[in-house]
Every structure is written in C-alpha cells, then in structure tokens.
Image (cartoon, rainbow, N blue to C red; front, top):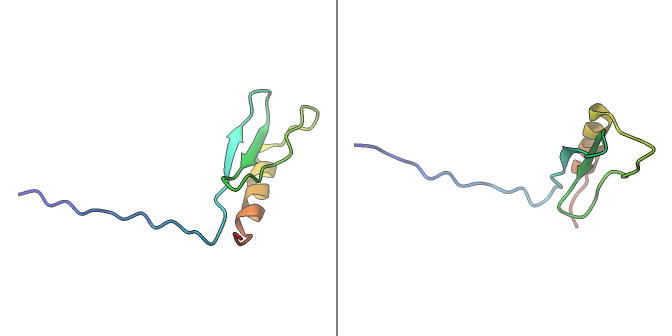
Length: 64
C-alpha cells in the first residue's frame, strides 16, 4: 500500500519574493512579481553578490 500526503504550499503574502537572474548582456539582475527590479543598464553590470544583496533588501520590505 502506498501512502501519499498532499503538501500544501504556503505562500507568504506579507513579503516580496524577488529572484536573481543572469542577464543576456552579461551580469546579473533581480526582479520581483510586484514590478520591482534592479537597475538594468548596459554600462553598469551587477555581480551576482550585488544582485543577491539587492534582492534580499527588497524581500525584507512588506507588501502593500
């Protein structure tokens, strides 16, 4: 007999959930479903660490 349990995903609606992405022109950026994102400039390319820290700072803010 196989027992399966359904796992409910708990979405945290109080905080933002940005994700870090590699840009096609090189470098990294972060974007969030709320519309927030790191600056996207061809002259300034963020390192992964800079994009990650920016995403962490954004995720600490409370959603309206």
